[in-house]
Amino acid sequence: MDDVITLADSGGSWHVRVSGAGRAEAAALSEGEGTGVGVERYLIQFWPADL
Image (cartoon, rainbow, N blue to C red; front, side, top):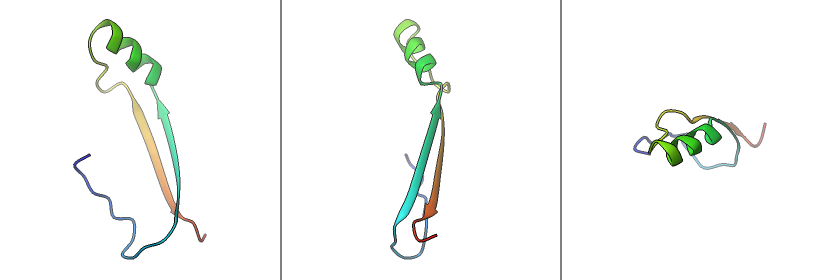
C-alpha cells in the first residue's frame, strides 16, 4: 500500500478487526479470466486496547 495511516502521535497497543468479502469470487475469476480486480472488499477497524 502506498498510503500511510497514522493511528496516534505516540506508541500504544491497538485492537484490530478485519472483515473481507468476495475472496472466492476473485479466486474463481483469477483462474478463469485472469484477474478479479475490484471484486474483493475489506473493512479494517482499529481501536485503542486500553478502552
